[in-house]
Image (cartoon, rainbow, N blue to C red; front, side, top):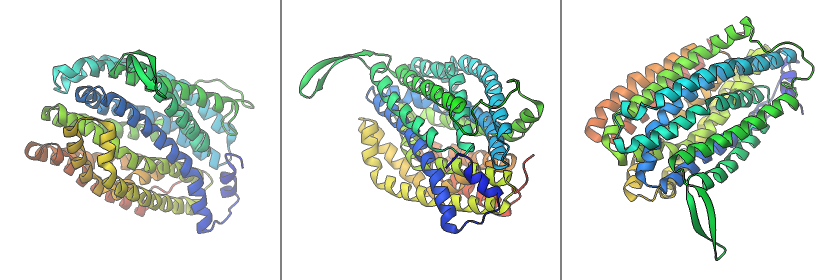
Length: 469
């Protein structure tokens, strides 16, 4: 089956049974879920390896984590602005147009990411001080963030290629590449984080070489694995993808006004949303930072541990963007409506189950991530608070993907801003002063529940059902 065969069936007017729709959702969601799990495994690996260096090393990464999310959100918004157009073009059967949009997205994304990378690098030199962190964390935090900033163009092109393949209907290949990245991350980290040391292998003592870069080595290992993923996905898109390969289309690489305008229409609200959301995360970090190294480390590990629960939701969200986008492109609003609710409820079911399992397994997870018993205890306490909000968190994640596929990004962005700034930060600021880190996570659980309800209401009103421009 070719990448866009489902889109061709949509255009033919075919009626799908519930089981057929569920099968399509499953076929597109599973690779997306596996890709997201592979990415979160990289975070687990980084956290566990750095955790072996002590709580201060983990805290230095946790300190700048929200800032990496800020810049990552900007890159993701850029990728979505172009890739949603590819989903619409694929659904409409306009393959040459999809190829052209892909080509233009690469040159536009490269120029933007180079500028963002320079800005991020300059900001990173002063970031720990701005966040009021303990001076003992500054050096590692700056090194970690600086390496991240230098690889921003690599991350941007990788993100564009992965999103383009997914929105063209190919969820399998990005999943494979993400798994390979995870394996490479382990290998790179193994040699870059730790110094040359003696290890016991099958009863024999062996000397294993190492760079001994510590915290910086963790980011360098992840960045190198993403460079490998970028090269793989770019090569596949250029030469193998049924929809995106360059063969068969002529033209230059300069972005056209119409394409850039639509990318801005889709991506700008997402960029503003992500900027405000991640700025809120930075503000949360500023609230947490004065609570001490233990609180920062526990907060960082709890976020990492919880991610295994919500990453399946993001995998399903990617499938929802593809299905709704192609349905809209094929002018099948009936399918767009049906797939939006089916994917949302699937995400709620899977994330609820994952949250239930994590509730009981989180002590073991934290013992894997860090050897510090004090950090383990606090991390388990705060994570169990937030897991109660997992079902509605799932609804907000997948509904966002559905709305994005239809090109509806402005109102969802406003809903996110109202929720996180109006609920999480105000409540978190108050509760953290009296309850410490658990107070911040209570505020997070309340906010995620409010956000889920808002997105379900938006999905139900169906103002997002429209023809693509």
